[in-house]
Length: 488
Image: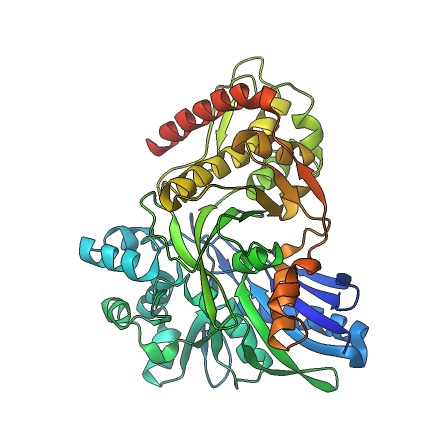
């Protein structure tokens, strides 16, 4: 068996990668875009059936390439997005509620202080519409089909991974892994179980939720082509990237630059409680060992570049942003705060809105484009400062991946702002690589100590000491812009 498939069910696309175990690299990939809808301000929805059918399409395309030498399929997925479906028919009872959706923000804010403290203590999270529990509760309160399925004992609720695996196994496996469960606001990350007290507070029945397994567990079997193959290895996309970037030591971290920005910082087997508004989460569970991480997330990073392209028409491609940013020596005092749907860690301000400030008659689109890119790096600086303070660990460097990591200007500016090296691997699909690595571990095709060999070395961006003072001034200006955004 020469090949593995890594399925990556992301926010805006579903992709599958064929990984050659002997060559330790991707040799084939298939991709399908998936849509999002925005029926009301702050609402984000997706069609769960579209996600499933396009996942099946890319898996079958990869299976045809791998043929009879396919060993198994590993899965990674967008987290927090909730699917509710009928456990008999398999049909979704409502659109999937996306992780960016803010419809439950007021509900989360209205929780009493005792419940908020219980959430933080048991789950490592903060009460926010970002996470899955409030989305499930909303559907139970507002969707008649969900209420009917619940009364009939047919309702299932889970993140995208649970829905896809249930569909692929024809209802035989209703499962998730500890990393996805840790993002629901319902999972006790120390006891590694659904938390009875929180389920009771939110009136969410435990029997509508999936069984929770380790990240390197067998998840079930599915038919691909004419063969039955194991579904083995599962992690939420950011945790899968932590594995794919081989951040296995305490004090190592990775940044994924996607629609949002996600920074995970390995704290080892110690679950660190943040005093700075960061999240304590499960990094991965492998070989019977659970590793924890601190996480900080910006809701919008690459989406700011998409806004420049699709909303303002300032650029025609994302790559064009690098050329414009380097055409000016600075932003000339222009700052951008990417709070399109509020601010995530460490502010957790759902009412904040995007802000462009410092614009003068001399401002050009190059200054604005550069300000958007710089805001991404400054947001990461917010998170790393908090992580080092909370954990007592020193960030030795960061490994980066995601679409925007292809931007050399952003990577160099990130290194300058953080004051540490930024390591970009040769293959930037770290999320899919992590899923493939977990699959290989689950199937016994490799050992944990051999995983670093799977990550191909790439380019390291070292901080320029001569730019340190300028970056500190710029960061102070960005923080001032954030304070203004919080007052809106």
